[in-house]
Image (cartoon, rainbow, N blue to C red):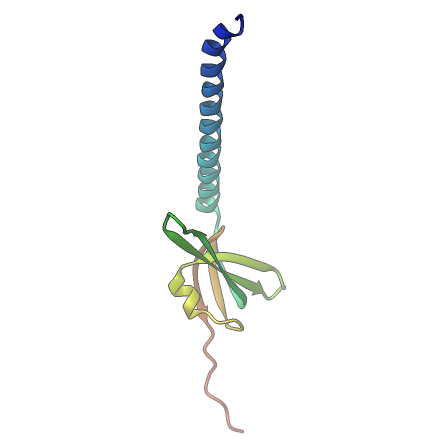
Length: 124
């Protein structure tokens, strides 16, 4: 019965390692979120002509927890560069594929989209 004393060392050591792993994963998530926020805060606010070319949503949670819906809109700049940004549900509903206008964003933060309003038709 030489293995019996190892239970008193091995089990607490295993539990301690599991807790350490959990703390490392949580710490890494917090660090990543902090870096992402800092990058967005220091990024310049950019505004340029763009067109809405796609919309999608993603649902997370549900089951025994509350569900949350994330809304994303894909914009295309005049130089054909694409950018997908998360928007609020209200903005998602107001934007339509094919809308042209001026997009404003700061890093990955959506700031707004102002639609181009076509002028009255001209008669010649």
